Image (cartoon, rainbow, N blue to C red; front, side, top):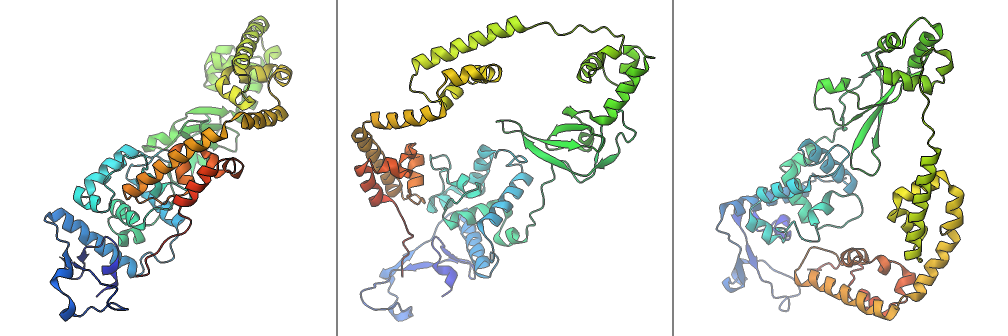
Length: 441
């Protein structure tokens, strides 16, 4: 007898490289279990043989990983350490972008190719495209409970074995290579010299793209999307954020001298004439130059027409949706709201719902809800979701958080709503698992 033989789903002996027999113990005959050959009757033994060789090899690997864990290879690990290693190896193997999204389709396809279909079916892990998406719960941040056996499968897929997972060094992500990085200010004496010590990563608005921001001591600041794919990318500029005091001082001196034409200055500064125009206006140097630049056209009339048009759109939306709160209006009419708020904030404060009004409307909305109808609907949906887990024997712990995600209603996590729904409260107490149930045998 070996302790790894008692691990759920383990069907083979790693020492003898053979399938094990499952012995059915009659717990009523004896207060303890005896494993003596004379009493091991054939009728109490269940064979676990599988004909396919790939299935046997997968079980051997699984048994070896269990043995490695019992030998202390995962000692002193916590979930954050494990997920950090997941993230690092997934980036290295191309399943995840640097600071970006996971290529889920490719990850799932390769996972299903790595293991035999029969083997995954035994572990109830052969379906990766259900609504539960258990494989995504393995690498996501957060306190999501996943059956440890699935972590074994995922580690074997990514690293090769538990031992290799233990030996893997979770190196720092270096999307732009090793320091230092060059200054790309063409008007500085240290142009192309590696003098920038560090950079910072920033997410681009609401997109999934990330950029690196590099700032030199000369004030020149530029961005570049990550990661660098070759050595030449170190000298690539995505966008210049700030030109810096070295650039500004040089341009100011050239203009104040009055010796050079616009074309000559643009050539000396290594910029276009169009860029020169914008820099002169930015530095308020128009009066010190003989260059004739037309000022921007007066757009007051255009802006007023646009402002009136956007106000009308907001008014029409509010008249058609009188109970909407301000955040709902902002989401539905994002462009119009931002423009009006920026150019006429007083109008927004006078015409849009105020903060105090939002609270009143929220209370009124709660009063207008038919809680009996909602209670019946939510309780039925919870029953259906819970029975789906039980009937299909899914490796999912039934909790309020899980059920709220499945039925797409977060009200069951809030006591002020739940207290108004007695049927739902009763169903939750029946199906939710508050503690782990452990088989004492």
